[in-house]
Image 1 (tube, rainbow, N blue to C red):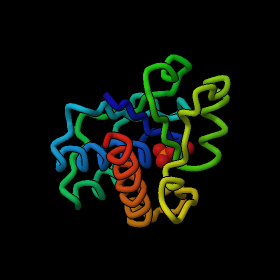
Image 2: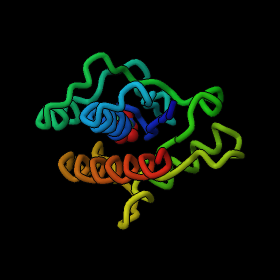
Image 3: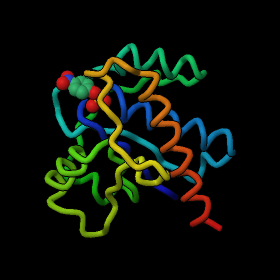
Image 4: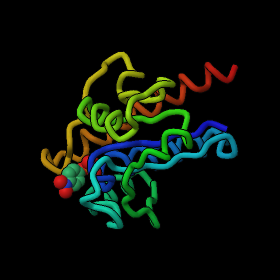
Length: 153
Ligand code: 4NP
């Protein structure tokens, strides 16, 4: 079982997009039974809130539903529950390591570091550019999925 947790700040835009885009890729490849995929935020500001409507609409444009997802907050117990903790930007990585009191097993990655164009995924809450966010997340999820497939071979 490969256990993946996407993490952003609020868990209402980028990390739920990552969660549901990767779930969609895994489903299309008939590998659902091999993965557990979830998401959380480093802040508790949005705790319990649904996915932000513009993120939800962007996913729906691609036939991806995120129904039933409500924001959760990252906590120290998540460290042992997951194999890969996928952050959206460097600031998330810093916050994640603070919450986990380190990263002794090297589980924390920045999502686009799996691609050949590593960079932060900007926060669409501020940029309002959900299309660029979706494209970045799709690239990152595809690259991460290829990385896992190679490891499984
Ligand atoms: P996210 O976006 O980290 O991609 O979920 C944000 C959502 C809400 C806030 C910040 C970022 N906020 O400050 O409320």
